Image (cartoon, rainbow, N blue to C red; front, side, top):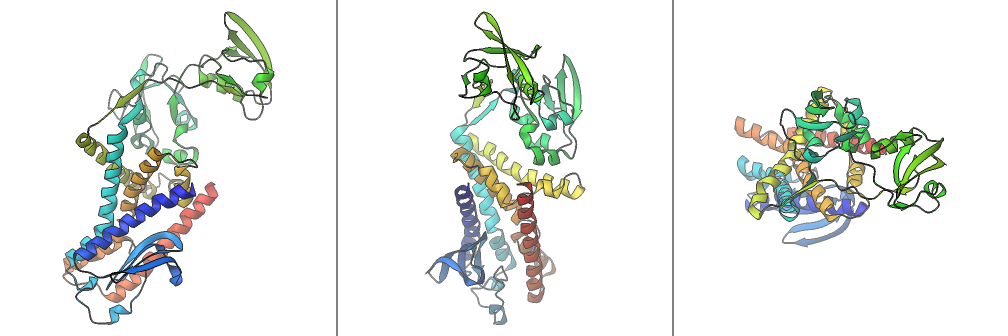
Length: 434
């Protein structure tokens, strides 16, 4: 998990800072340092100098930076600003050039995000369960039950868009951001369900797999674990479970619900073994499991492949949706629909997304998503971020003169403390959730 986080974030930080670096060099601006992570208090893990620029790795893994001559940045080195401006310095260049330099990292992150999703779409296409062919509808989890979804409901439309083809559309941000209207079919009748505006709180607490999942019949027993309660009950491979305590359980969710409702109690399980009906008795422990492997479920799957050029707009749309989802999410926080401690995650939350096993499809999907999220976060109008510098440059271009160095220094300090506060909040929030 740690290795994946370090690799993924290092790739994104280096590419982001490379955007600033290349833009600065293109306009003849001197770049003094290029660092992955911060070399706070001058402590460096590694460094070398090439063409008057120091490259290295710092010890504090909170990002990275390029130190551009004549610019007030994270280093807060203001000594050079006391000297007369030099032609190779940031402050000597026209405002439009400085604006491009500040946007360089964001532009590269957007390009990286689009390219990653483009290549993922081209290489793997799109694979999803065919929602229209789910014969038995869906099963609600904790969140789904709260908004009124029942086992067996078929989701026909989202916000009036008929014929929901992919099951992923049911679990999309359009639904889980709240305020969506689901058109469902229940017992042959259609009705609408409104998804509450604050559903993200529940999603953050329980995860989205507690919304709905495809419903399926209970498979026959594929394997019985050694030493399990199922083995003591003499349940055999190939048996079909048809009832628990005399109550029919044709669906998997009905069987698991029956076990949960009988934790710590004795149960009677009715089986079909070939043409013979068999009844066995046992007890359900605190895990609400008997030690059965019921095999894989063969859901109807749609596989769509795309050509190289055809994949570009699809990948770009996926990348840009990350930004629009972030904008919607922050909007809901400011409106009070979603609690910040539920919606925001820090490094621990990111690490948990990568997981403990390496799956390169998942890894690159997360890198693409984080690249777009990094672009969005850096565009926020906080002085220590690229977005703050962009705002100041736009103000300069409008009023025809730059803001004072004293103001920029103080703004940089304020922005720095805001970022530290956000980091402490998100990290503390991660620890509390954990």
